[in-house]
Image 1 (cartoon, rainbow, N blue to C red):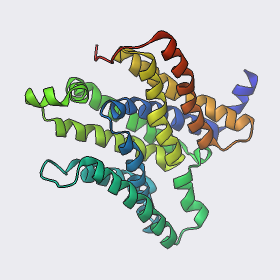
Image 2: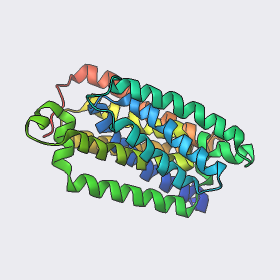
Image 3: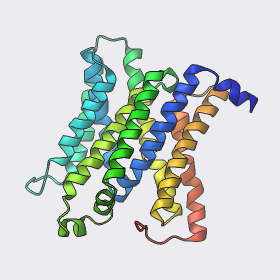
Image 4: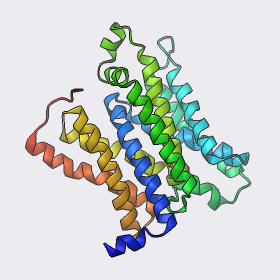
Length: 277
């Protein structure tokens, strides 16, 4: 305990923990809806678009956070506008976003006048380099997304579980999908601005996958996923400090550990389909 108290007596560790816990918990929550909507590949493509926004910001000496938010909004527009009249299926648009985002970001990094190390920090992640302002923005993003989901919970949930029935009831499925995409873009922007895409994607898919393996009750899935995201951030950051490991990748690995534990537990107990009760 004394070691933990000493470790988190440093400002940079508390800032890193704040971003990791808030960002990890937020992405773990949003990841549930990514899994339920079967758009996990979107979770891999959108960080690449966010990275392109960061690269644009660095190239033109603008705040990387603004670039990340701009990239998230651009990804939202790109992935939500194509409708039934499009000759390309949604998976094709997601694939294009992944390919374009990852390649354009590299080109922009090469063109950037900023030092390579400063630019690569925003892509590989430097969780220990976070500031109090980064932690504040993570808190603001978590509060904003939480407020949106609280206000429109029923519509977001029903469109995630049964979009066909939702459309029959007159609910605008594309609108509420766009709300989820925009929330996802905000969460990814805040985390990627400080911790990189690896940690963001791991938090997005790892904790919610483990929660979905273990439970069928939607409230239990939500609580478990958020707790696993928070615990992964704390455990990963602590181990990285104690054993001199890279912070972001260690936290990302910690976010995937629960899946290895949930698999045998699920096999022993069994689980029915998830229901929104």
